[in-house]
Image (cartoon, rainbow, N blue to C red; front, top):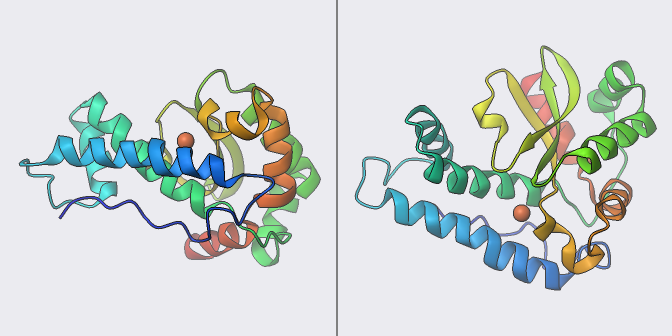
Length: 199
Ligand code: FE2
């Protein structure tokens, strides 16, 4: 059974104008698909052929198969990213809101910290809101690196800061993309549901 590219949880034009259908055409339809296709090509005929995507990422990490890790981790990171976006953005609530206040100084401060981490990440990577040591934290990982490769880190929300994520809609203005993500697209409800599974 091959790895499948998870269907988007909304229509490709549902996040416009903050993220256009044209961006999804390339980002989901070509970049993400290529990571899935490359992963499937690499595992075909190997013991990983029927493994889950998570297991493939972890196996590639342990065997130091960097090419497979890059493609499988990117396939996984993109799945997580699509679910970190929503056309019906609402403020954090419940335990997530409490922890944001407790650990990160409130939602405005979290947004400021997240934006600084994402904009300040040199070249390609991913900004993440995670749970680590029982607390919320903001971090970033480089290139294809993923929370799956960091034991004790539970991801709640991510933003792709590879240039292909924003160039069509924002050209080189990564900060504007982050403003749009944090103001209009971030799926705090989904982040809260993930938090509820671990705390
Ligand atoms: Fe991407």
